[in-house]
Amino acid sequence: MENQEQPSQETKERWNQDPENWIWGIFYYNREDKRLMPPKRIPFMGWTVNFANRNSVFLFVFIMLIIILFIVFITEFKK
Image 1 (cartoon, rainbow, N blue to C red):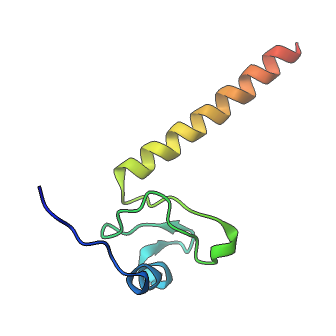
Image 2 (image 1 turned 90 degrees about the vertical axis):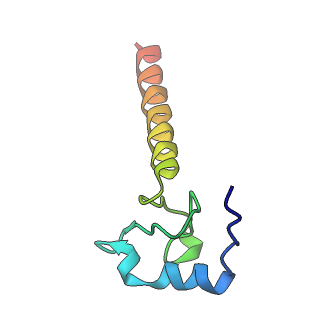
């Protein structure tokens, strides 16, 4: 098992501010960053998905499926 050192706060901030890690300025894509939900460029706006991390994408799809199922359930229940 490889013992990976956690990146420093400065490294995380540098990754977050680097325009090369943002596709079209809105999709975060950084293979070095292992966080599932890193903060957005403007931190008070919440978190984003790291599309370079497979587990992060799975989490995003799972959350979207839950939301869609909830909407379908609510609309069927109202009928």
